[in-house]
Amino acid sequence: MLELVWFSTKLFFQGKLLRDPFYFFKQIIFGSFIALFILIASIQIGLGLWLPIIIASFFTGLIMPFLLKDLKIGSFK
Image 1: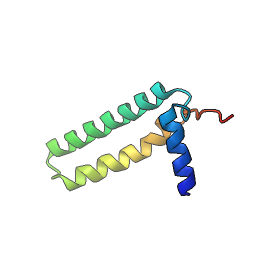
Image 2: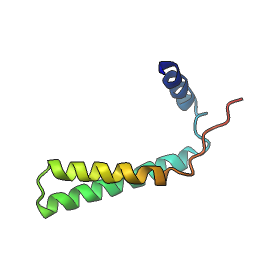
Image 3: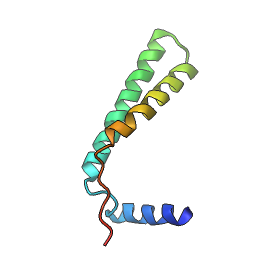
């Protein structure tokens, strides 16, 4: 398992892991803004702090697979 993590990390920093890194970072930033919006809106409603964090994390975890469904991993030659 550690070998897989090491290999993936090495490819990522060499720029060979993702075929389109711009797409990946765009989707991650979009998901993060959605989470931030949910977090701020929930705090404004008056739910405290711990419940909005749980709600934002849960919803972000649900949408990330859909945001990254077209992610292409680089070819390993």
